[in-house]
Image (cartoon, rainbow, N blue to C red; front, side, top):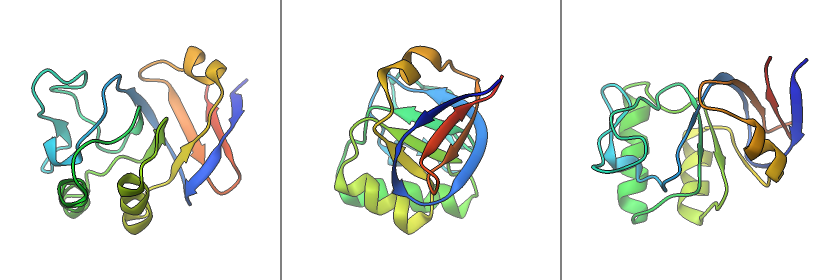
Length: 135
């Protein structure tokens, strides 16, 4: 049976995809738009693809210009993450998620972060306020 956790909606929408978990903050400008691969040196996700996955991460980094430009180019190549689960949403990330129409949530319980693993199939339903980890 799937495990369901309540969350807070930041940007509306629903998505189901594999989870990819970052221990590091993300600057979307450092993600290669052609395939969604993290290029930032020494980043927890260096060399990994975030495209079309549910991205769990602490928060963003960098100026609004580089964040929005990075998201724009990922969208242009259709390599945007399927959804965002963020621990520390800042105004730049929030604006980007809303503008680019990426489901984005926060305020999940510590139990969620203890349970979820890289590669788990996750449903983010921002509209109804839950995240579900599939069996």
